[in-house]
Image: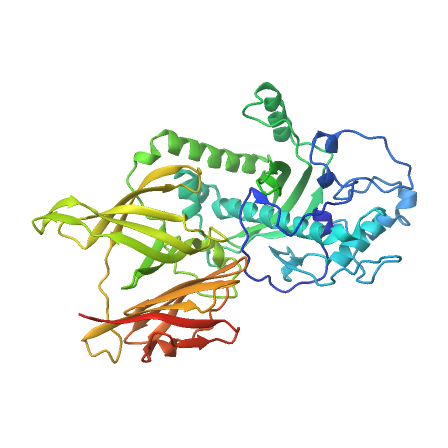
Length: 546
């Protein structure tokens, strides 16, 4: 896979909706690579030794790793023409190949992976370039109609591998001591405290220096897992990885640069109910002395945290969360990881989406609490609420059953409410009990409201289709979420006397809304059409007396 990377400089990548492993094959990718590529046969056969082909035939492996050549022939060998960073031709043509009947796109997609040289991100080849590269390497049986799907799979898996590497670097990029401070809180705790969205001036982001494919060299861990599969087939699989990469990453901290090697095993994980294949990536640091300590810290920290009764420990908040609920029970719930740092506020930062723990919106169905004889100190039955999800960064197309629910217990003498309920834990896939403590904030008024009332309204995309969004204002707060295809965006504004309306949160695409609209008189049915062509409509508007 990695051998298809191109060499030319690329612009910074746009925000990505990338998800971590396991990775399902994109829905529009239904074709397969050429038969000579291990991706075509994700089974033990992919790693079985085969007869060595004649010297004139290309090696049947992907990515391509050149054989050793004699000193006499090295100067004239075609291997000397490959870029040593990725074993790829530096002059990939965009011209249609001879006898090619299928028109392939020539557009190239930038990755989210920075180059070690510092001059932008790695750039993926266009389908036409990939096809030409396959032919040039000798894969003359390549089906041109499958190339676009091959590019999609290739890019998809590389992005997933980089996401895992970034998780390692967030934990250990600032040294072993800081790494242990994160890892001792377990996997979820370390994820929240791993300097997500760290200031690049303080902690430079990792960069990919070079990589190599080693599909014929099974790692000791992969061999051990395969052996465990033979001994315990009910718990472990026997199918080996269909590919292996070594990625060399530049880690920089306190002005010192260090090259760290990561190993990536690519596994086939069966199929989705829809028939689409699933891939699993096992990404970890190589077993150098320092990196072996990193692996042990991350594994042992999580084991110790759970074994010592993590579920019984005192609750801690790992997000900055704000929920706005309108009078007609629409809501927008946004949860940003790492509350010790300011929320991301740049639509051009592709890493900002990693700070979004959860963003969703919809309608709430509530049953009020029942008190004895109206005495609010004697609760007979707590309030019950169901939150129906209409827009969700974790669910592509939410349905009527995508909801969570809980009972609300007021905390006497405070403005806090304890929510108790059950929902699917995204880490385990099981329905588990949970508790969340909420604080009701006092709603302020903005200029022109004369200390008499505050305004609330709900703004939604007019004809929700490919674009589905909701924005809510409650007093001096405005926030919204929007899904546009695979991309997800959130935004937030806050009004103050000193600065008026100021954007305080932005992840993903710009909503295009002008904050000057927030102070105008609004009626239900009014609409706004922004520069991107998206049309918004006010669904409700209320004035609340203080």
